[in-house]
Image (cartoon, rainbow, N blue to C red; front, side, top):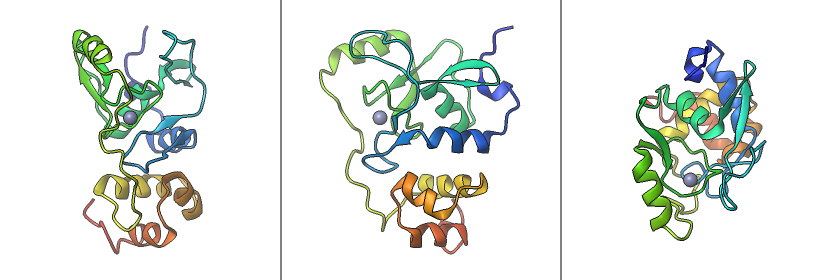
Amino acid sequence: MRVRSLLDLGVDLEKLKAKLLLKVEMPNGPDGCWLWKGHAGKRVTRRLSYGRIIVAGKQFYVHIAMYEVFKKKRIPKNLVLRHQCNTSLCCNPFNCLKPGSQKRNVKDAVDSGSHWSPRGDTHHSASINAETARLIRSLAAAGNTRLAIAFILGVSLGIISKVIRGLTWREA
Ligand SMILES: [Zn+2]
């Protein structure tokens, strides 16, 4: 039987999040593109290549895995997961990926000639958002040290410590 969603596998999602994030670079912080540095499949075209991972013996696209694992949502059956930033190796489930129709997907790729980052401004560690706070907590819950989290997210140790201790973003 073909598995349609990672969420049907019954794997530990927090561990999977941590595993995925270890192979991601966030040159513009968590709000910008998350660039996949792990395995990528054969190029679809000269410019397009999609990250892939194996979970429980089955292969998944990294951007879809990220979306499902972080949003805990499936992609609706008739839709594809579109890269709003037009960067095929990006897998930021919060800012760059959105379900849409295949037709729209192709149109977008044609329309945008160059790379576009929706919120590509440099991330200032002094101001994190609720998503980053949640990310810090998931990474900590998955057993990552504060130092590792600081490295992965590019956020200062002081902020990470405050979030983990519940001093800030308690409601996130
Ligand atoms: Zn992106």
